[in-house]
Length: 480
Image (tube, rainbow, N blue to C red; front, top):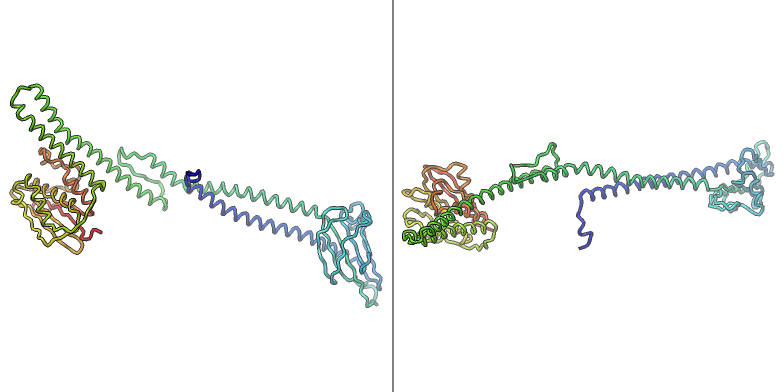
């Protein structure tokens, strides 16, 4: 398996990365737009300065009665002097050179670019200056303005071409500074966004971390505990509620497991103690005929009781973990009831006299035969043991549109309270009247409950009129 597959997924990392990426793209787009806008504005300002200088120089060209004059004063524009030689201009009358800046005198063979173009048009091009530096040149074609002091003007127009050039080193420096500032701002902005996003996500995930810390402190083996919070978070509350339900169920299961273990030990402790006592007596009095005559049968009886307990525990375990394979089929309920009665006849010789079976052969259900037979045997056995011997046990079945309800009622000495009605289905739970009977182990109704859960049945116990305990088994007509 690759390292990428082994890496755990992280909600925090994914949120931070995704949000940081989105915000970084937005910031980069904004900064890039600003950078391009500023670069364009700076270049426009540079070009505008060239245009302004060119317009100023064009105002110095006059047509005085068809004589072109150029009135330039170097003290006002020293950048065109020899001492500076940083910028240049050149003026053409028609196609002939009319005037050159003093700065061009340092480069006798150098000429600024000349382009043919319409009147009153201008163009800016990138150009390598005579001094070898990078620059830009503005070329403009215009007509020399007439001298307003001369009332008579010639009809001839003198066309002029002006070219001025300036270095772009300062412009490039400004553009580089802007780009560096943009890059640094973008980098720091990305890291700043990631830092802020991390802080915000950490704060947002605090309730989840707090929930995890509370889970770490849980101990279902101790007193009942639940996860509580000082403040409610809408997304966390459903998780907290489900966890509390899970914790409560597991605490109950753990408590039941402890009680079941204790009860199993108690149930097995008695026959084991009897085996030890019988063996010790037999060893102490080996020649006592009264002991030796009954020793074997007593050992067999105790062993069978232990076997019954173990078998019932195994059946309870199988029914609880879905280990039993269900095979549903059509069953005539009355036939299955008669089969259960025959199986219990050895244990309750008067079963047919005490059990009043009101179920007819018309009642047909769909169920697993083994599960239903085990349930009926345990229910009838329980009713025969706990019911008053002089009162009949009523067994009936009723079909409605969705279920078949099998009811088994028997008279008892005193009605069971709510706690007893709920506890009789717990493993190894016994009423006081059965604790003195070695054949009762408190597993029958718990096996019934487990099989009902496995098959989708419903079993409930309730008190009815005149000290009558009724167990209702509800079987759906359609188990699909």
